[in-house]
Length: 503
Ligand code: SF4
Image (tube, rainbow, N blue to C red):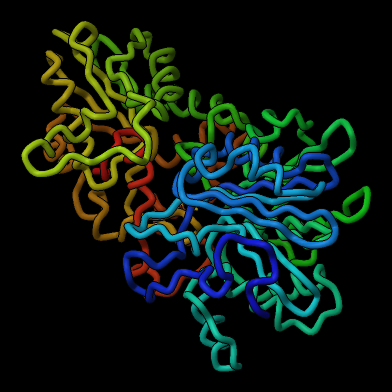
């Protein structure tokens, strides 16, 4: 395998993150968005729109690779989708097949070479890959491959997969992909693109979402969430099932299930926070699930108060549910500035205390003299929650009662979501009362684990879901060393909700 076969804006020799294991910037852990379009005119333009609608899954970088049947063309860049692409670039991405990727990175040094889709040349031609997830055995595979002579540019798990495909002796890309995927463990929703075929795959546990849609003209689209299908006016067909591999070639696709059945472990945090509320994820509308979670939160954690206020945006549906169930008025006591982009200059030194106020502003007209229930989806380090409580008090609230629409976040994620290390999570070593004292709230309560699954009216509790970041019950074993490479899921949450490193 060698890099450089596709037309790209940088040398393929540098497309990997060279940071060492254990560093804060090792590029293993991302919550990303993927899109693939097959057999449809203006495929790159449609992928662009899909990535645009999945912007919430990654804001650091974006890329698209297209195929016209004779070769792959790619463009990748740092920043938001609308910043990375323009009309000329999209026009250059020719062909009726394309895949794309939005990347979220917690590293301070987001580099173009880390941006997907990755493109390589190998024995069967050119290959591009977009990956959302994390292989928990990547290090073991990496070491084995190195012993066998592979030369790595990085420690990235996606690069491990590419090497496995390149080393496979199977005669086709499909067989090589299955051969490689059979060796990795953990979380993946993947899209591969070669000159004349596209492959979509979801890990047997189904950690990360992936859906299949169809254009009325006959072409196909796969995407992380249905909001991407809505924007490109594709009809939702179904989820790509856990453990399913879809092979697109010619006019149709073939569904394969090459891996044995595994218990479903869909990421419940997709419902609580990650996914867009207008998406259908794991077969359910996210907005409705969040509202139901809010109703359950009200049933479990009622308090005498005057108004219910969400921490926007992700806390809004749960707060609506809480207000409905409790009978308290829903008020937007916190207003979010949606126009603070990644070019925003963080305040330093003397004015650093502005902090959370840059993205969230508390409204005295709403809050003054009120007993306020504040609804948020998580408390990570506690620092941001403390600032929000302070803001609400400064705006004149008489009491501030914090309610969290999830259980306490006690453990890190190893399945494709950037998380702080366990030691950085405030709920890992403080009790609820201690956290309440730290954030200076009048009261604090979390949703119970059982209550979290109340949205499953058919029952089943947490069966079929991963909730390891609340329980420490990891459905796929992880090695202890991974803890050191964990980074910051909830920095993403914080950046989105408040504009500063969170809690
Ligand atoms: Fe999702 Fe938490 Fe499981 Fe990670 S550990 S996959 S964030 S539920």
